[in-house]
Length: 342
Image (cartoon, rainbow, N blue to C red; front, side, top):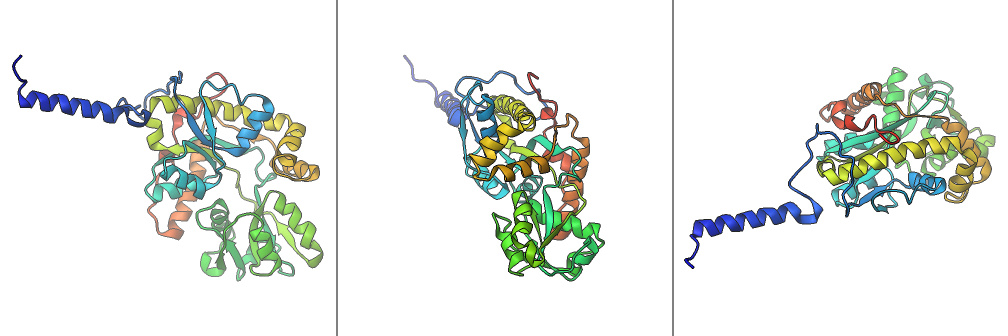
């Protein structure tokens, strides 16, 4: 049999190499277009790595955690910095965050998309954060923030909130002293109690505990009167190019919506199973947090959410010197109507 021409051999070798590259790591060269309908069938062998500890507990308590058509590897990851780091390491498919991480990820060269959005009904009556005021500091209104030392965490929701609060008060960062501190655990309540800062945004059970512990010394909180309720699932844009992953994410988003409703509709089970058993809080703390959170709002039209997100982007861009980006580019609108059985 005569030898094949070298050009033909080279072509065959190139084809083999391209096929191998296309199959590496379970990826295929048949990438899903960003405007293509989301696939509904999850192929066998698909897996998601999920950083969403709260939803994991909700799905466990509701009995739904074992009903997915694909395996999930749960990662104990939460918050923007951890999630973005895991994305860059290719160690996570989807994470649960507020509104800031998607902005900062984009600014740092990590393309991402929001695939689920949740808010709070009557958000001004159910704020995520209140402004903690250090003992003896005379702050009763937002206008009183002038000249104060304020805890500030760039890249996190609390940091963006402070910038919004200053704008609402007609102030700028030049009218106050921003003290950079990470908003983790009880760092802010302790900084307030020690007079390291005059004002700091504190959230969750720390609102209740701060005044309970230091109220006798004059510690107080005030409400800021702004919306601070965004809660999102987001992914790397690259992940959505994989049809199998996109189908699995669609199924996960539907379950996330159901879990959000279940939490609201089963407050006693949630208090006992999450706040007490999982988080180690008291039943009283759990009840406080359930009441503070209120009812979830899971819109199927994200237009208003995108507009609010744009306001946040513009405020952060002006403060940080980053180029403004279009909020609508952060959202994958194919997911906004994903619901039970949809």
